Length: 225
Picture (cartoon, rainbow, N blue to C red):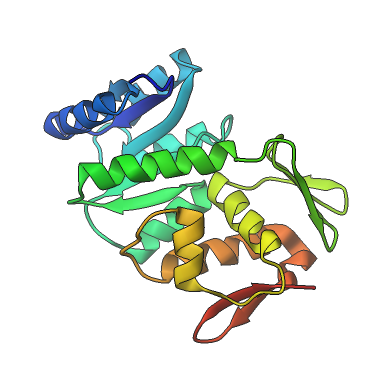
């Protein structure tokens, strides 16, 4: 059944592209393909209807990080990165560039599809007419805009979702597991670095308001003024 969503799959391995293509088409997605970063930029520029990009990190000609850096100059389209190794420096670099999700190879195609659907669902938002406001932070879900004392700030999709979850649960101590299960919206098998990295970046972007996100040592976080 068609869902009117288009996905760009970028990987230099043709077998990987075919595998992802077949699973995504089965679930109703339109799929575009590219074998490296340069091809991805060409496809991206020609297809403004793209909903999400799944992109490998290590590729010839232009790698995933270079490609993402260029894309982020003009677009906040959700991006899921595929990586053959789990390296903290690489992950931090990716998050700084605006990666919404990391998936390590090998992985289950069914899990990838579930994560794609979760990212799309969260990025679109479930309540299009709701505006959240707390402690000088205003979040317009419909416009996907966050303002600090009236001044807009730029957040990635995942940072936006994380802040939304914090505001909606203000004053409540949230474990890392609870944050993962609600913000990432699937059974996550990674470690706490994923949350901690996003929280660090979010705090930085919130400026003085970043102090609203309190660390609860050994557990997680709490959002309060």
